[in-house]
Length: 281
Image (tube, rainbow, N blue to C red; front, side, top):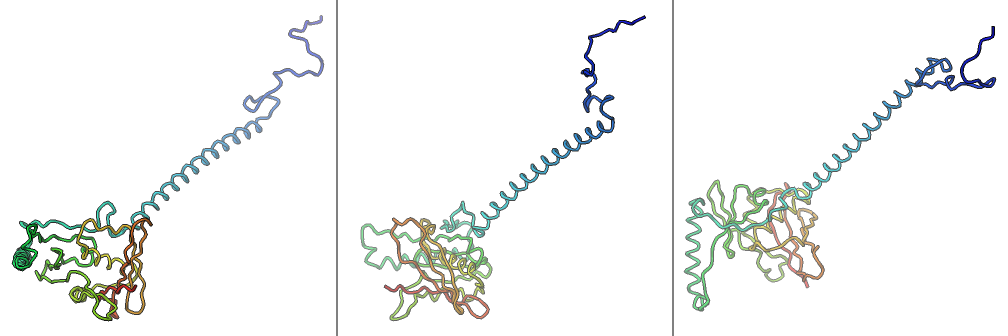
C-alpha cells in the first residue's frame, strides 16, 4: 500500500530552510565546538572593547589633570613672592593707638621738630601754606623677606627703619643724591651702612632682582607709582651685581631714562653697598 506524502513537494536536491542553522542556533549542520568558539570570540571582543574604552577614558583624565597641574604650577612660579591680586607696595596709615611706644614718641618729636623748622621758612608765610608732614608705614613682601625684624616708616622727606626687637631707630636716608664732581655714582651712604649690617646674601640673578625690589619699595613715596611696565634684569661681574630696568610698556608712553643699579657684595656674597649709576648723555 502506498502512503501519501504530506507537505509541500520539493524538487530533488533542494534544501529546506530548516536545514540551515547559525552559531546562535546550534543544530546538526554546525558542530557544537564551532558554536562554542564563536561564543568565546564574541565574549573576548566584548571584553577587549570594554578595556579599550576604559583605558582611553583613563588617559584622557590623566592628560587633563597633568595639564591643569602644569598651568597651576606655572602661575604660582611666575610670581613666587607676591600675590598678584594685591599691590606690591603700600603706604599704610599708622594706628597710633597700637604702635610701639618707642616709635610713637620718636615720631611725635620728629614731626614737632619739622614743624618748628618749617615755620621759619619763607614758604610758611604764604597764605596757602599748610604743614602736612605725616608718617606712614611702608608695606612690602620684600621688606618682610629681607628685613623681618624691621618696620619702615616715612614722611616723604625722611625714612626710618624701626627694629621691633631692639627698638633701635635708624635714619636710612631719603634716596640717592646727586653725584659730586666726576663721581660716576649716586650714593645713599645711610642706606648702604644700614644694609651692610643686615647680613643679606645675594647669590644669583633672582636674589639680586628681589633685593633691588626691596630698594624700590622703600624709596617709592606714592601708591600710584606703577612698575608694571618695567622689568628688571641682573648680571654679575666680579663682586658687583648690575641690575637694570627695562621698559616693556606701550610705545606711545613717554620713557624716562632707565635706572641702572649696582649691588656690591663681599667674598661671602653679603650686600655691603647699593649705588646708582650716574646718567650719561
